[in-house]
Image 1 (cartoon, rainbow, N blue to C red):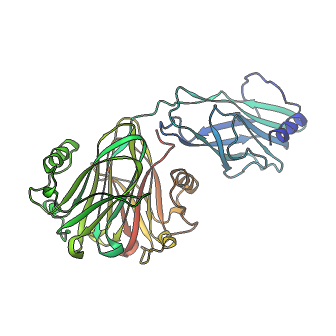
Image 2 (tube, rainbow, N blue to C red):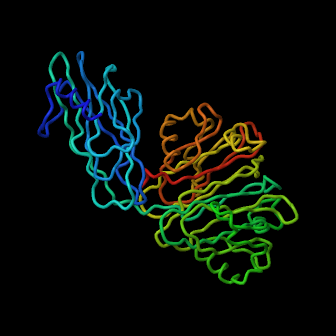
Image 3 (cartoon, one colour):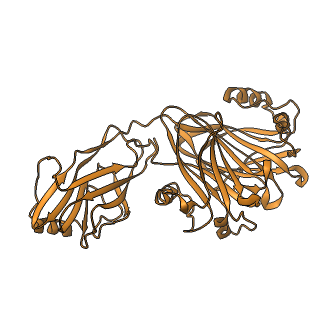
Length: 426
């Protein structure tokens, strides 16, 4: 691929070393990364490039040198190049058009970077190559510098309030821990204690279990938090992390666990197949090289107080980019019956009550490609083109938020609420 582009450049008469120069007056190039800060855990960055020209070009190309250990992902956008790098390519990344689109020519490409980067990451000499009316020129931009000094924002608390049914309709929140080391978590299943907040129809006696998704092993279980041998520790840790107090002797459930990186589920059901509204909570107590990066909850979506309300807390400095989804129709591919036909998704700031983002039908967003790319990078299953599932990408500062999933026109059914920490976020 690089040999082919080099021959094109030779034909242009512009191959070889060219000193840093200002943009040509009639030709311009812009390069915009999706973020200027790299995550400490690694990730993907999308670059949007626009080449503008006047006249009738006979050749058009673009080149940039990626930092060491960065690899090319994929190209796309409105005008993808006919000649582009292959997945996994490193170093110089070259693009060329055989059939030249009308100006402005806009395309995107993704690059993947590893964890634990140090110092600025330098994308060297972004260059647009033009041959117009027989004259070859290069437009060279300054290097694009990305910072690897990531902010400290992170998910520290995730919770979901929903209707607990029976069988496949019990409340099943999932969460993912990334990194190395261990994460100490307080996990609770609240039912009776919700009445103090005016919630009616609560689950009278929740049963809680924590399971390792990869092995299927049950890590911890509880029914009646006060029956635990460490009830005093549970109460103390709840105060430490800012959770509301559980009434002494209540039938709410809770455990404290120490978990390595991996995927886990919290299963909440009613003792003797009872049903009602319950709250599943996961609090980060302490960590050593790990972090919470994803929460997902599958539950029955009702109406009024019976919709899914997934809560999460972002702490630290900087902002956190998150992919938030409300899945209904796409669950059918996993054999889920009675799914919510058309979910409506809203992300709300708990302190102000303001709606930050909302969506019904994910493909109607202005950024469906970004939603797809982030979903792929975090390992989320694909949403079918044109499906009625919902999704948004949000950049949030420290604070408490909820993601609410309801049915359009008060419809009901099984849905999945998901919150992913996007690798492109700081």
